[in-house]
Length: 395
Image (spheres, rainbow, N blue to C red):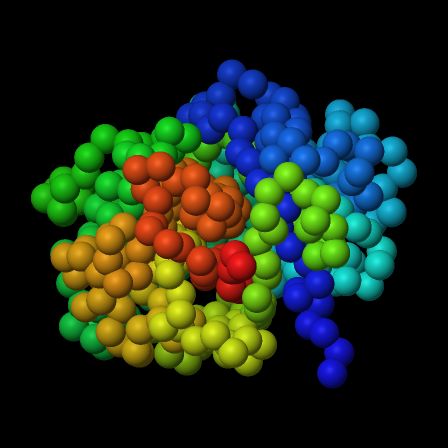
């Protein structure tokens, strides 16, 4: 039987730059900081890198969503003649560069690939509050996927996912208190993460008292714009003996794409096409949901957490609201420690790459006050429009 591509690849290093709101450093400086730290973490030098990848590729639209290109990283790090380069913004969404890098390494096109995700959205918001809206501050014509929502005055993804939240509330009898437990838990975990932007304690009363942004979602249901960079180094598994730290194995991957980007809003609004990513992931491993020690679940908005928990089979359909209620089962010492670094709600929006970094923190046992005891497996999910998931483990 042919080996799974992901079984031939490991995570060998990971790091983040400082995270600012905003930062005084440029996006390229932050990217260099993260990449060099990740290389040092792996015990590698720039000359060892023969692959570079990012999501979604440098964007000409501004807004700070993608301010750095692979070619700029090549130049600033002094990487000579990379054999494989990718900037990807489609397919299985945010994790696309990682999944493509896995395949590139497995088929011999590269041996060590650095994958980075850089944002400068906080700086962009300082310059113009409209910069991060889906309309991009345009007053005439909106192109691409945003054309399906902006004409209906849905200027932010929160307007879309508030509809999912309300549908979930209506179908399963969920409450704001149950949803608020996610934000409260994230903030409690962020208190132990020195790179998190929000570390002040958040109570459920604080959550409920916050203003509604798009009913039923409140202020603390939303992730936060930041400036910063996260870098992950992927290496061929047979290089593990030469690396600085024990490799993190990629046990299984799953991916799917939805039609939300092209205006396909139909069917059951209490679930996402992430279901198919979950089915694919579990079909590629003998491990089961009960074997997951902790999870880093995408939380662009808090409702994503419920939808992903169910899509990945971590809880039964319609039960995520009761699973998170009160926060005990998702706490650091709970049944399924969740978003242990604070998630995007408290640590800032890296479009899921902060979750991947936090998974490495847990599996390498360097979480300090937020460390999950004996964590050997971690499930990571990523995306609200396109969907990626990885099950990571440490031997």
